[in-house]
Length: 334
Ligand code: AFP
Image 1 (tube, rainbow, N blue to C red):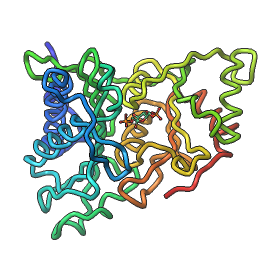
Image 2: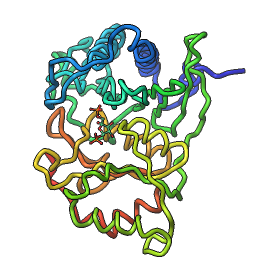
Image 3: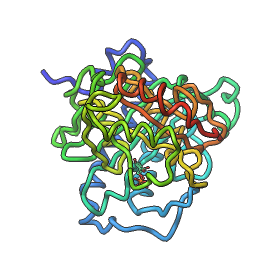
Image 4: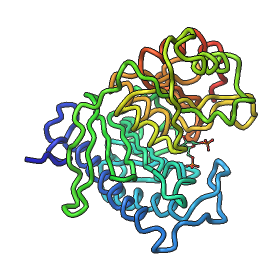
């Protein structure tokens, strides 16, 4: 018999009934977005808009439609006190007194949309602070380290739509059965293999890299003759969700470093709704995840849309990379 997401959630001792209801609503939002992505060329929703988000990135019609789906569907579930999104300058109110805060990137990798490649959604559930129960949610309420997360996950819209989730006791993956409108458990106990020879980095930025990263990547390219004693193969999908999914299935490392360009002084990816949830999933699956100066989950954000460098993936190669090369690069947090 097949296990649905609801069946699986009901068995999780680390997840309360309100959290389960919230997560089912997030999964429903992702199911709806999977349909929007699939139908985008038919409904004229492939293109860029003239608007930009707070990070000065041009928004796509699907970015905003996906954002609306998250806010609309998750807003119907009173367990969420407030929302933070890549596409919103400030927080959005949920139900006052709700137990949880939801941070999300509604459509990650949106430059892949018009070339029919993988995109995804990423989300993070944090506890609503007690002090916020009697008032409207503020941005400061979200500024909690990734270790505080109660649940995190992503949806991948690719050859299959997948929903991958942790409630703090391992990671499980579900595949969308479109006919039944259900997420079905297909990847129980996802584990990042300790050993792997795949790496993902945008090496077109090499001229901007810091010295530690340069040395690490030189060691990667030398392969088994060098200090890392193994050969490597490269993969880069330009959608963090797809790269992290590959790592959760067959291992490897993913790096989006800080570099010498002022715009990338703290990396490109956002701490609250990209690096922290993905770092949590990778740790939950037995891998490691570093930010600017150590484990990314220890970093308390100082603003809603703060960026962070990220290096996550298979334990053996990344622990060695961190200790021998990357730790010296550091980066200003903030
Ligand atoms: P978009 O959502 O703007 O396409 O960015 C995707 C992303 O945030 C992340 O998913 C990728 O890993 C990374 O950016 C790709 O960045 P580069 O375009 O610099 O390779």
